[in-house]
Image (cartoon, rainbow, N blue to C red):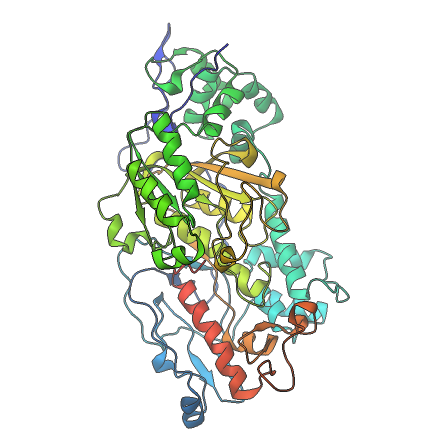
Length: 589
């Protein structure tokens, strides 16, 4: 028997007509009041009290404004001024405060300040005022007392990387850690103490989530509304028609049984793909249209970060076969010249995409859509957005999971979803593919960033069950010039059975979302104290300098000489300049 056609999006889910009785109406709030919202992941539950603010408030990172000015890192400047870079040369678009350079050539540092989570402002918001490099409030040396207590307990008072990890934690996480019996293992040769502490924080956050493996629509609803097992059993027994209505109407304030009773009293309005097979099993039927990638046929689709454009080509053919009329905007982060160096077939692929009425844009930063003039006029136009295996770019000498670089991957997801808010149609789909065991962009980074920005988690689909899995995956960097992944192969050190597609739907409430918890990079002084620098430009954590990955570096002389003093300061400053650009919202991967 032919499979039933299914499709649609939450925004297009049918409005039901009453069969015999009029369903109970949801009470309407008095005029002038804001209706209650369902608590989302990353928000405080109703009735709880916010923790007291720290003395120094969070900064707000924005993609508005010009790039930071070049730091004064020449040897002549260091010799003449005795500092790595003057505060007058530092220009970063952050508010209300930002770090400034200080110190001497023997002790280069940034002024200290609490390294708690910072806040990212939507790119479509009003531009921030440019602040002078000396703007500050309060003492720059204060930090939560729990940080000092934990470092003393673990004997790590001089470990700048461990201190940085604790400073980036929230007040509740610090208190939870203080009350636990956890302690890093100094004999662990694979992970430093800072990495162990950071992993502990991450694991505790992920324990409170729904998990990174396959989840159906009932699993995600259970986690979002904290449903009982009895409610879950009831939802799994519903038909397609009834389950769709429950997903649309459940708000966390009415009981699930009331919403189910309402659903059963309604009949579908015929004529939409979402209304197909109303009496079929609900969970499996709804999962099919996500796997078949049936979306709004008239809305445009946006593909981000598609290095060799093979996914965009597969999507274009898929949409043409389904008779979709919306166009595709296929984008790459790299320039056309870079792509032609890496992929010999790229010109042919672009030509074929043009024949399928798809546009190809190069040099698109997925975190800065609002300041890309090509996106003007595309507000609320995209009914489907795709971003496969996001990555903030490798930092030579560091593993993705190291705390000094992992903040970049977290920030990437927050900047990405915040940028999408202006361009995604209400009810539009966003699908992000990733490996559930990835240590750079973790699944929890994707889910939490999405829900903070009002992209409701619908389902997590195994990548191997997705209709659009058969494209030629690539590394997306210079490795593609020498090595190519074979067909649908998974990435190095990642199991293919853990590849997932995280599906979301944009459900704006009309209320300004909370600030994105953008994390700040480590201070330049921390990088200087906790790394080794080679003359060839290789920089790595100190504990990695004697490992096999660094065996060709840090010699006593020659092209791989170990750098000290001013030469090391200059090398580390170059890395810090890159971090400064990324905290301002520039994706570099």
